Image (tube, rainbow, N blue to C red; front, side):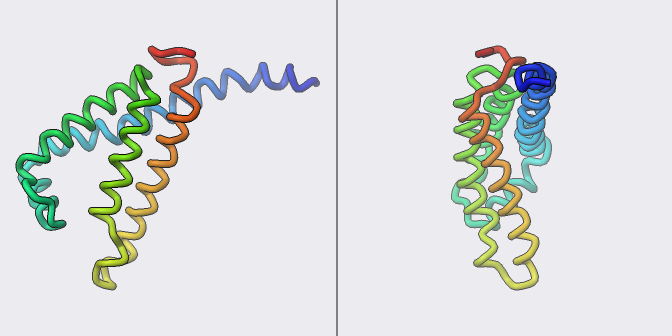
Length: 141
């Protein structure tokens, strides 16, 4: 079997893998936005615990950003730019809320896991930025 024949059989799987990957990343941010709106007081308390100034104010743009950019990523509309913005947001959040090197020893492993998870999420988002939304998107190539 030639490489062209193999590629023609694999391409539909790759198209759907792009959709599933993009949707998985988007749902993460849509869920995060929902929890910020649904559990505002605990989220504000969490933000304050990490020294976030004006948490009562900053929760709104954070939640709206995650909602908007998550929806854009989900639909594949301007997905490259949504993914880049979400990657930067994730990296900044990771440095603020999961700085495992500055927590007590009993919290270090948990925070390190969250740090690495967010690093992987940012990596996936950067992959969407680099490759685009894929075939099944509003901004089809």
